[in-house]
Length: 539
Image 1 (cartoon, rainbow, N blue to C red):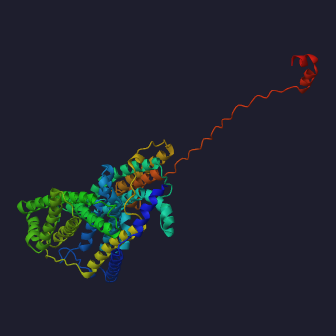
Image 2 (cartoon, rainbow, N blue to C red; image 1 turned 180 degrees about the vertical axis):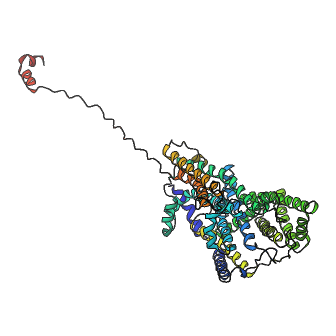
Image 3 (cartoon, helix red, strand yellow; image 1 turned 45 degrees about the horizontal axis):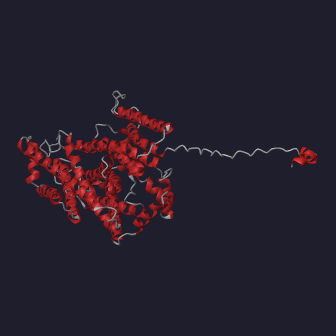
């Protein structure tokens, strides 16, 4: 391990702003409030929330689903930024890649909790969803692709990228946490071959994760977009709009988080303004694309849509949801305009970037609300009673607890592990990797088993072998499919952490000097010759 790693890691973990303690306290209080509110919901039932049946005075999906979609959307930009930095060698973004990956993991976990909060009987749902879910169910893709595939692939990318710093922290980190660091960096060798091997595996992971991101977020859009009987939802724009808005909210959240971390952990020299400038440019491009989607959606709904869809559009633009709609348009317009003006003037203001990023997230939350609620309260084809949805203090408290858990997780992690990855020289990533047939065999075997589980679980989930039966022939077929997805990404762990074959040290060949020839002399012959008078005369 290079000794020069040590002074870069420890000061970053020791120096922290006093505001960090205040933020941790506020986040912990929010988590406590969320737990209390959810306990009230469990005790009283879902009647404690503002959720009611569509067509009977309310909406079945409310704040929980709104923030589920929001949190999953926030996770999009995190792993996307890390993948783009790896695939396209964007060195400017590399200081924020670990922060982006951490945001993805925590946001996905919190988003999954929102789904559980929305379920009336969460434990029953946790058991039946992996056992009996069908691909036609909107939450099948959520369980298999978003939670299992998306979350686990992000975890794999995060763990493998942090092994270099974990191996260093095993020597320089807090003594109580060193066993965790040793487990994280187990088997890592600080040599050029190990860095090259990680460089290859991270490239394959990034190339695999990026299409998975599109599929996962498109699946969320399909939950709404393929429901032909629900005016305001049925649209081909739902899937691409969900992807773009996820990029808007996620990029905005990453800008805010990076700006806060720079101040709290005093990382101004480690996270350059150039990284925030790049994220700001990415934000205004995505905001412009989504503004275009909103214009197309409104023109289509008001010009040539059926009567029910026109009614929803008018209710959103000028009816009971008009305030939320115009706040969304204004916030999204400013989220585009502020970084765009800075781009034209070639200036970068961290404070104004944070303002634009916060406005982008306000627009994301309000737009999710406009997607979820109006079509339930005013979007029935039948002449049913119009509804009204107002979130109660229980729902608001649970959402605040989820947001507090997200902030608390990131703040606490920043105290035990570097949030900025240690840079690796470019020359160390292109070494000659020796042939290792056992490593390749183990990786290919893991991938083939995963492919078999995916094919088996998905086909049985589609009831291809069940005949007239409603349930799958094999129990927990959706869980088998999800296990195959997880195992497929685990092949990257197998490739990188497979024990390297130790080379036998070749014994040095000792070259000995040639022995001097020793001439044996007959002593008796010398004595006889010395007594010979002829020899004495010659001498």
